[in-house]
Length: 290
Ligand SMILES: Cc1cc2nc3c(=O)[nH]c(=O)nc-3n(C[C@H](O)[C@H](O)[C@H](O)COP(=O)(O)OP(=O)(O)OC[C@H]3O[C@@H](n4cnc5c(N)ncnc54)[C@H](O)[C@@H]3O)c2cc1C
Image (tube, rainbow, N blue to C red; front, side, top):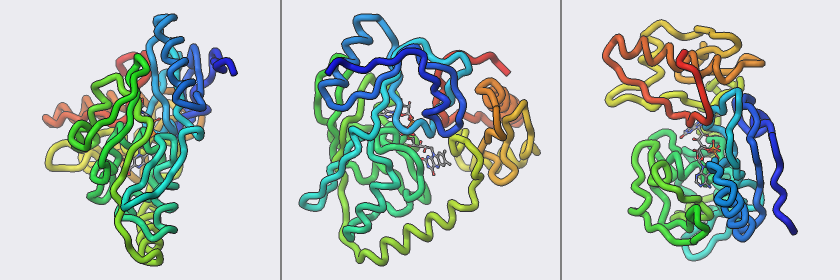
């Protein structure tokens, strides 16, 4: 089957923010071979590549992106378990991974329950919560570079640290990963998942990307923003959440520029107190300094 490359696809339909202009080209490969074809297309057309998982940590500009967006989606959402390890496709939702393993009496990563996003995006971001990160469990991963070559990364190759992995500085696509899993009583695991999700229920429910900024050394970004008196501040239809100051929420119809202008405002005010706040959310496309 020829590769189904679509043009001018609105990315707001693929992001948790419900914000974002069009991708010049957009493709959802169904196999490693199709992914390679997509990379060849980008190379032939000299297009920048944007990898998309579940879109829960990207802010796409209102003018969109001038390149090829490759979505690693449901075709890469597989899970198989063998000899103390889970082999997981990059497109599997992280939350589904945690609950599917718990059903089998396997776990360790219940604190990650409820984090939206895919396993691929989770590795890229080294997603984490309540003192646990996805990277803690990774034994090795299978990746493809932008030339279509497939190779294996060991745990240390990933260079995991706080919300960081090697993928943030290299042209590598996570295809699948092998995670260490531990045996535990199923009911205990399910109870821990329910507990984690209960804590998460207190988070804002409006569209967002979760935490906007990384925590600066020794403190929490949310605490800094709250102390700056910025909770509830609005620009257009974007707002610094009243519930959790590190969340910027889309009240409905917010533009990417509204969100970005709030990001800039927070950064400026924090800088005046000598604190550098670095966005955790990935910015795609062009923005104007707010
Ligand atoms: C309500 C809410 C709560 C959240 N809570 C948390 C939390 O508790 N902890 C936390 O860490 N995060 C949290 N997040 C942020 C987000 O869910 C995570 O960062 C998640 O891991 C992103 O995964 P994704 O598939 O959505 O990635 P995307 O948003 O699609 O992409 C994020 C980055 O990963 C790259 N990427 C995606 N897939 C691949 C791949 N296969 N190979 C290589 N690169 C890839 C993209 O290019 C992009 O740069 C939250 C978000 C929301 C909306």
